[in-house]
Every structure is written in structure tokens, then in C-alpha cells.
Image 1: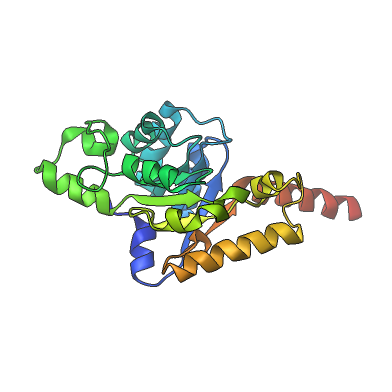
Image 2: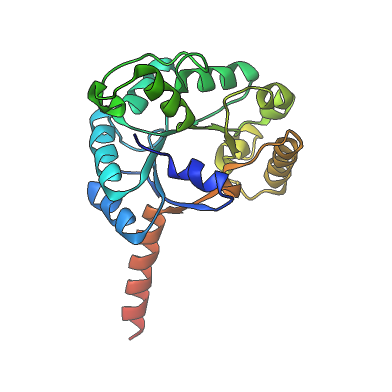
Length: 239
């Protein structure tokens, strides 16, 4: 059965490297694998990913030796289940502002007794081809990475409740939405946003937990393309 490379790297005290993909492309997933990346993160919140896209892209990720993960548009059970049943092995839930939302995210990602994920036999469950249901469920629970995105000003009002929830493995920020929630739209680098992020990180550390960027780092594929193209144009205009 598949093993989550990010979790393996975390346990070994190593950094995991991934590509952040905001549009579906099986070719890029394949290239990321050839380049030696550990995982790929699909932006299912803002990108045009369908369940069928996830199905195909997770298949390519498996073949390329990558762990497929996804940021999802909401934390409803059905939304998370569709991603996991396609083969996604890591879920980033947006706008986790309360302990209740953190519990909803964690519970939807794992089978009983750790959660309430529905059992199905889609490709994420090897089409039902496993010798032991309990063994499969225990292994899968241990290899799903759950990341809560803390990107709203009200997070600090509920931070202790959020951090007390079992089943959230890592936490992530989101400067653009933090800025909006603070009345500073379009200013993700504002001093107040940085101060908020620092306070959240301190609280996470005080609870004995980690931020995602402390165990994994991602290259934004669109940024890499844009920079390369702009550099190419600039170089040839100067020559």
C-alpha cells in the first residue's frame, strides 16, 4: 500500500519538496517526479480541478513516485471524500477558524476510530483490492496528512481550541486572506499581517506542533514558468 512521502520525511527529520500546481497537467506531474520532488499539491480551492482531474493526476503522481495532496475548496465531508477516494493522500483545509471546523476537517479525513470517513472501493482504496479491511484502514489513517490553514483574523480568538484538536498534523498560513480579514486587502506583506502570522506560529510551537513550511516547501509551478518566460524575453530584448 502507498506510503505518504511527506510523513516519512517528517519522521526522519528531513524536509519534503513539492510542486504547487494551480492547473491540471499530467505532464507537469510526471516531470516533477523525474526531477526528484517528493509530493505535488493541487490547488483545488482556486484551480479548475474536477474529481476526474484528481483521479487522473493521482494516477500519474503514483507512477511518478509523488505523494498527491490537495487544498480543497471547503471542508464538507463529501468534498474531502471525493479527493481521498481519487487517491489524494494529504488534505489542506482552508479557513479553519474554530475548534469545531478543525474537528470537522480531521474527522472527515480518517476512518473510524480516528474519524468518520466513509468507506468506498474507488481507486484511492485500490478498488477494494486489499487482503484485510482493518489493515487497510489503519495504514491509510496513518498515511493521510491533514493540514489546517489558519488565514483569518478570528483564528487568534479560538487558537487554543483549534490546537487542542487531535488529527490535525500541520498548520499553514495564508497571508492574502489574512490581510483581507484585517481590512488590508492586497497587502499580504503588511506589518500587521506578519505580526499575526508570527503570533500564530508561536502558539503552534507552544502547543508542541509545527507549521507546514517547517517540514515541507513548495515551488509554485506557475511562478516558475512566468519567471522563466520573462527572463527569456528580457534576455533576448537586451541582446
